[in-house]
Each structure stands twice: as C-alpha cells, then as structure tokens.
Length: 222
Image (cartoon, rainbow, N blue to C red; front, side, top):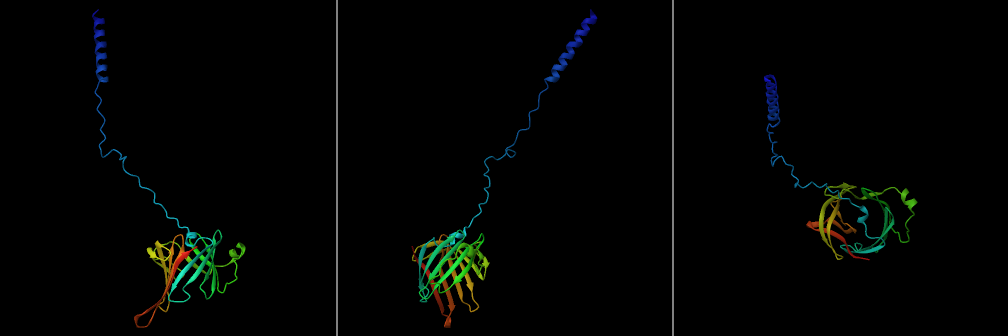
C-alpha cells in the first residue's frame, strides 16, 4: 500500500511540474517604433517626362500662304507658300518681288536638312518622291536639341523662350538661331512651334557706329 501511495505522489508531482513549465509567460515582442515603420505617405518620385520634339511642327501649315512684312530693304517683303509634299518632305516657294526661290526640306529624327534650293523658280514643280529620296543634302536647316548653345552648320541657338510680337500675333517660347559672318554681319532666324520661321533679321555694322538692319516679320497667314 505504501508502495502505491508513493507512486501516485511521484506521478502527481511530475504532472504539476510539466504544467508549470508550459505556463511560463511569453515575453512580448519588441514593439515597432515610429522610425521603423514604413512611411506609406511618402510620395513616389515620378519618372522624368522626356520632351519629344516633332520637327514637322517647325513649318507653316500645308497649303498655306504667309505674307512677311519687310523693313530696311525692298526685297525684305515676301510671300511664303508652304506645301507638305510627303510624310517627311516639305517644299516652299518664296516670292520677294525680285525672284521666286524654291526650297525642299527633308525631316529626319534629329534635324531638318535642305535638299534643294533653286532661284528663278517661276514655273518649277515639286519632284516625285523617288527623285527627292535621291537628292543629297545641301545643308542642315535646323537641328536638335532646341537649347541654348546648340551649334550646326555655322548656326547657334542663342536664345530660347523668347516672346516676339508680330503683326500676326504674339508668339511665346520662340527660339533664335544666329550666324555671324566674317564681315561682322549677323543673321537671325526666329522659330515658333506650329509655325516655323516667323522672323528674319540681318544686321551689318555701318559707319560712325551706325547699324544697317533688314527685317522680315510674319504679318498674315492664309
């Protein structure tokens, strides 16, 4: 009997010990501080938007006729007719009362090149596409990027985001191409998106500090 009583006591002690071990308090996890929490309110950085320039926008509209008002020379006044020949070819006729100048341009990804320039083009017509594709370039007319300091073919972009008043309208975001000659003369071309060339200026130093200037400015568009 004493043997069985001792066995029961030992079993009860073992069960009590196991219960106490399983009931050991669990230490709480380390709380996440405010500094460790992810900042869900932090705005994401937007991807930089790349400005895409379509050089087709630097010509007057198809089948348009623009009148340029001249000052300083009788041939500074002229009519400019523009025709978009094919997807990447534009032709112009410039009539200043003394002669008619025909020009054809090819539009590439990064520049515009002139591929034909012909004076006395009174009865000239525009060649077919197969002939235009075979014409070599004469010179670069305009090149990207449109930013100050860009240089090509002796021209330099000397100003951007200019505001220019003309008889047609006020143009914003105009950029200026400049070329300086060996005789200290300066030629400037002013370009506006959606119109192309809207103004030309020619300056030549004169005697006694004077300056000779000829300007052609867009005045009407049909």
